[in-house]
Amino acid sequence: MSELTHVQLLWLQGKIENRIRFGRTVQELRLDHYRREVAFAPGSVFAFVRWSSNDYGTVLSRISVLQAVGPGEACATVPFVAPGAAILLQVVGWPKVERVLQQIDAIEALGIDPADVAPDHWWHVQNRMAAGQRPRPYTILRHRAWLHRRSVMP
Image 1: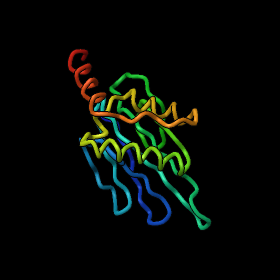
Image 2: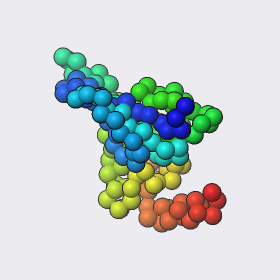
Image 3: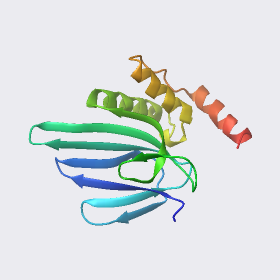
C-alpha cells in the first residue's frame, strides 16, 4: 500500500473540472487526455476544487482544503481521494467557494504559499463561514508564529 494520498483529476470542457488549486505534488500520472492522478506526501496540505454542470448550468461547486495522511492515520473519505484525507475546510456552493478562493488569493498576495499556512487557519475559515461571519485574514505575523511553532514542536 502506498504511503501517498492519490487524487484523481478529471477535465471535460464545460462539464466537469476536478483540479488542485494549491499543494505540492510528489507524483503525477497522466491517464489520458482527460484524466490525471496526482499524489501528495503525508502531512501535505492541498486544495481540491470540484465543479460540474449540465445543460441548465452549474450543478456542483465545491472546494476542500485537505491534509494528506500517513499509513494507519484516521482520515475522512473524500470522493476522488484515496485512501482519504483530513478535512481542514470544505464548502459547497459557488458563493462560498468564491470566498475561499479569495482567501487563497489574499494569502498568495502576501507571498505565502497556501500549502504552508497553519492548518488551524483553514478550520477558522470553515467555522467563520459556517457561522455567517467574515474570517480573519491570515497575516505575515501569524505565519511566522506558525513556522516557529512548527520548528519547536515537531
